[in-house]
Image 1: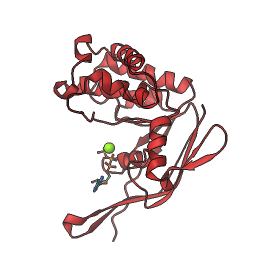
Image 2: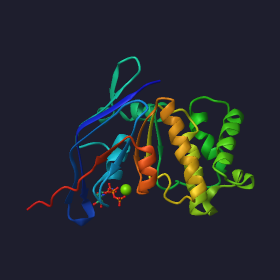
Image 3: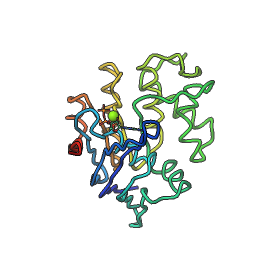
Length: 233
Ligand SMILES: Nc1ncnc2c1ncn2[C@@H]1O[C@H](COP(=O)(O)OP(=O)(O)OP(=O)(O)O)[C@@H](O)[C@H]1O
Ligand SMILES: [Mg+2]
């Protein structure tokens, strides 16, 4: 159950092909270590590269350099930075849960099925997965009548709660949270703080971006500063 995440020497830049190949360096020699039961908050000014680091840890972007080491409970280690697409898919199904800042709406799929999907992907029967999904949507105060509707027309806060339920529905040993409380009211913010506490208590490792300082102070054990790179002279 206890996984450890250790990233080192990470570099990432973007090449803007439509702008004559302009290079934008974002991260250089970034490092991070998270232990089971710990929540590390990424902090730093807008544009510093927090979400970029998060996407690297998710296996969403390839790194230009560095390693992202996931140590399994049996002591073996996977390097996400050098993993094949097939390995990345398996790690994202079983190991790395994430809550993005915005829900990626899938046309015509009801909220309860979007939330069930991580459980179904792990082989849990759909009806059983729906029971878990619905319970979590209730806990996040999403009205019952919305559970069977596709979230395309939901409000920002309703969509974010569907997104949160999807991220928290399975017992991932690593969780990545990008602004999980950004569009929530105070009552639902408390639910998310409680959910994060439960995930820590069961020994999962978390990395989060929390612009809300109160939320950050209550959930984070440590803050990691992501500093903007200096402009090349
Ligand atoms: N896909 C991309 N292509 C080109 N540039 C990108 C891409 N993604 C991010 N960037 C650039 O990388 C830099 C870091 O972006 P990132 O989204 O990681 O910042 P952030 O620290 O999360 O900021 P915020 O607090 O505003 O969310 C920015 O200058 C951004 O313009
Ligand atoms: Mg960001």
